[in-house]
Length: 234
Image (cartoon, rainbow, N blue to C red; front, side, top):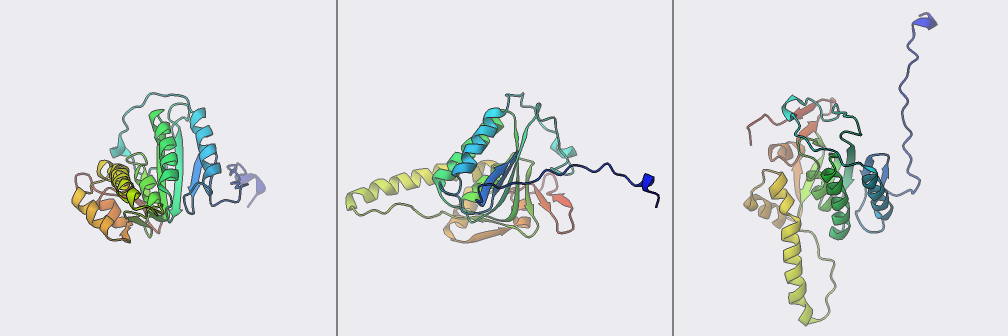
C-alpha cells in the first residue's frame, strides 16, 4: 500500500499517571477507586477531587433527553457547558466517614452542573456500592460480569464502657438510616427489599439484577455493547 494512502492522523492518547502508587487516585477528570476506601488510601484522592470540583464553573443544569442516549460514553458535551467526572469502581468498600467525603464532593460537582458517570468494573461492595448508585441517573454502568454488594456494614467503635453502648447504638442506627436513603431515592428498591438485602451480610447482586432494580442504568456486555432496561419495566 502506498505510504500516502495511510492515515497518519492518530488521536493522542493521554498517559494515565498514578504518581502516588495508591489504588485510589484521580487523573484529569477520571476517579479510580480500586481498593479499600479509608482516610489513608483516599487522602490524596479527596484533595485532588476537591481541587477538580473547585475548578468547575457554575453552569445551568438542564434536563437530558435520556431516551435518545444509546451509549453513556457517547455523551460528550463542551466541558464549559456540562463537565463530566468519570468514576471507575472495583472496591470492597471501607469507612463511611471517608465515603461521605467523596460523596459530598461528587454531589457538589453535580450541584455545579457536572455529570457523574460511574462504571462498576469488578465489584462495588459496601461503601463503594453507595458511590456507584449516586452517579447521575442515566449514566451509571456495570460491566456484565460485575457485582454490587449491599449490606449494613460493620461498626468501627470499640466500646469498653456500658454507659456508652446505648449512645453508640442510637448514633449507628440514625447514621445508617440516613446513609442508606440513596438506595430508596435513586433505585427501584423498596424499603422491604433493602432491609432484606442488608440483613444478609453478602448480598451480591449481578449486573442484570441491578439493571432490573435501577441500581445501574446500563450494562456493558462482554462483546462491547451497551444495553439498558426497557422503558416502563421494573
